[in-house]
Image (cartoon, rainbow, N blue to C red; front, side, top):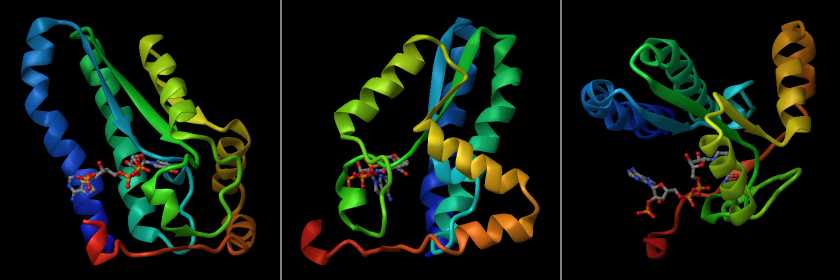
Length: 159
Ligand SMILES: NC(=O)c1ccc[n+]([C@@H]2O[C@H](COP(=O)([O-])OP(=O)(O)OC[C@H]3O[C@@H](n4cnc5c(N)ncnc54)[C@H](OP(=O)(O)O)[C@@H]3O)[C@@H](O)[C@H]2O)c1
């Protein structure tokens, strides 16, 4: 499960972006947006594979950005919190600050249109997870231990 999430979410994204780079750099303009998650800021219990894939994607995008800047190509790293989607439909657990897909898409589009390096929302979750990351591990673990959830597998008749 964890290795499959890393293959799809991280390696799938990298394998999509890498072939585009030579042409984008030759053209001398453009922007790549990678969809990570607030889970990229701090590993959440119950989803180590997902968190590893998103933290890896965030690190990949952060590393790519200064490398591509000299060619005029921008990189936006998107770290959304919860938005309403088939993925959250399968999520059993608290979804604080849940917003609609349309609202999330608006925030992401606005950030990309402005050429932002990062688009992360909602700020209370971003701030809270960064705090857990910066705090001593024993404190971060004690806070994160309280947050439990389960993601139901896709049913066969869901496609
Ligand atoms: N929903 C949230 O609260 C939330 C929060 C943070 C980050 N995100 C991120 O936002 C992105 C979109 O999430 P979502 O909630 O919209 O998820 P979703 O509704 O479950 O959609 C996932 C998309 O990924 C495609 N997909 C799934 N497995 C694939 C595979 N093996 N190869 C290629 N494509 C595959 C699906 O294609 P099909 O339709 O063909 O199955 C679908 O279009 C994801 O990267 C997710 O991690 C979501």
